[in-house]
Length: 124
Image (cartoon, rainbow, N blue to C red; front, side):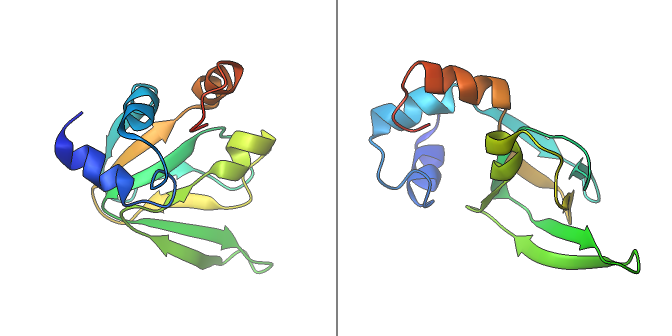
């Protein structure tokens, strides 16, 4: 992991109280994903048990209203995370996540998260 990545992670609310050693250990469980614009990461009603952290780019979180029109709930950028409900609850997504532009994400799968919990990882 580069010093730039350490610095980035330290500036996020998820990692700001972690040591460099803890971040390095946790980082080994993250998948770096490069995603094209207008790509769905998960869709409302489908099960996705991953957590995502935006490294660069932006994400729309949206949900269909009663008239089946998408309503934007949030626009997320670098340093913001999403998907924790699916990760923790293992239930169908309540919203859809779609990239707005080419985006780089850190992804933590549910399987890796559970392994970290089993290992009593302080960051998890």
